[in-house]
Image (tube, rainbow, N blue to C red; front, side):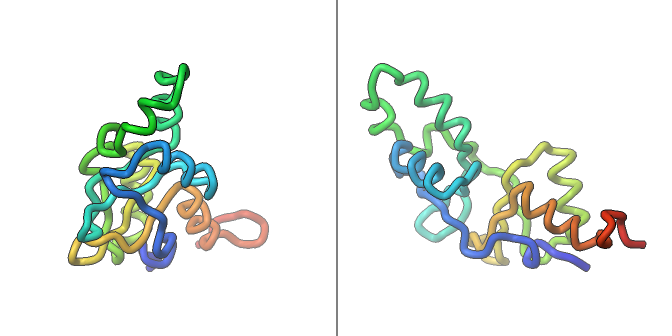
Length: 139
């Protein structure tokens, strides 16, 4: 049975709650990342930040980057995001993403430390594992 560990991005990029959003925005743009987990000093997930939110926030400061340089990730992140453990089944990940409209899903170990990240692209890749060469789902 396919699990989170098999489809996740291993050792994903992450940021801290006190990182400036200007730095985080540049990092996400450079690596073409739409969502990024936010972790504390113990590498435990405390939030998730979306590039879209950072871009919208930066529009509010379109007359200059002063506010963007001094604003921290904690001020714009979604606190306490959905997470899954490494051994969660693929079908349960699909249900969570569809039912809760989750776009980025941090994967944690039993100590609740970040070990991976699942975005919609990883889900699509996981679905392809269940398809034949013609695009039909295997039975």
